[in-house]
Length: 324
Image 1 (cartoon, rainbow, N blue to C red):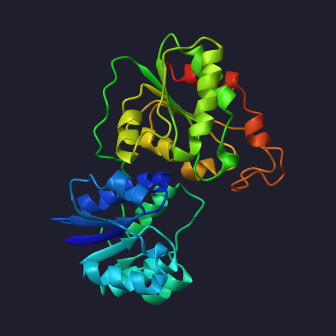
Image 2 (image 1 turned 90 degrees about the vertical axis):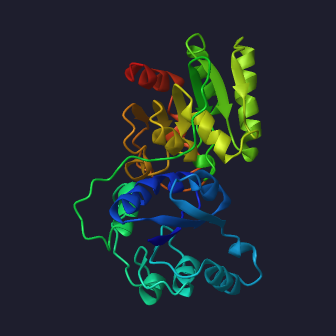
Image 3 (image 1 turned 90 degrees about the horizontal axis):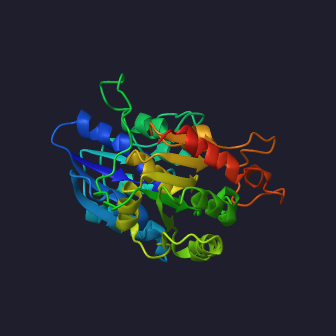
């Protein structure tokens, strides 16, 4: 059975879609997947053993996205079933243009017009559950158990116990805790763990600030990998960590996929919808404020109290509560 899957664009959302993909793989017979998505999501999920083809969707860069979407659909061909975990008109058009009869997507004005199965999904539940409800709407068995997150990139094996620090969050500055406080937490655990600083190409300055703070207090057993990893090596290195400290971000979900003990710092986002899914050793540090969750990329009130009020001591205490 050939299934087309339109992946979410963001790394974290793509990882949160993996339980739905695993359900599809276990529900239907002789599955082969074609994944279509952003470069980031494709690089993370293309290693699935049932992935026959992985295509980066570059239609957004075209002068006519409508025409580019049509051409991509014709290149992909017809499938037994198609599922979109994205909710925009071009994703609906892509499924429709493939001429696949059974097409599944979240209900919207465009999906209702163009696709065959468009369930109304409640958004006040974890995103993992939302994706699974989309994927399983046409399945006979509605009493399924939602599985854990799953990535197929082999973990890196570190010589010593390693603490991963992820101070970035691609979504926006409002989700980011402060570099000096990450450094304070890492310094506290320097005798137990080697330290790795993670970050994307746009987070090099932030990682450098953590590095400088560590040097200032005499910490030497650290490595700064910000801007030096691709998606595959990022996932492999996170998977090899013994402990991970992070903002609400894609790397947080990567850590959850590998059951890496994690303390996640939440501010403006809905933690009940995007927290680590089924990570047995995980803690959330957050403050309940009247203005949160605001879901804004930058603090609209200019005070950032949801993050500013969280101390290094609170994060250190949460790590100790994991009893590693």
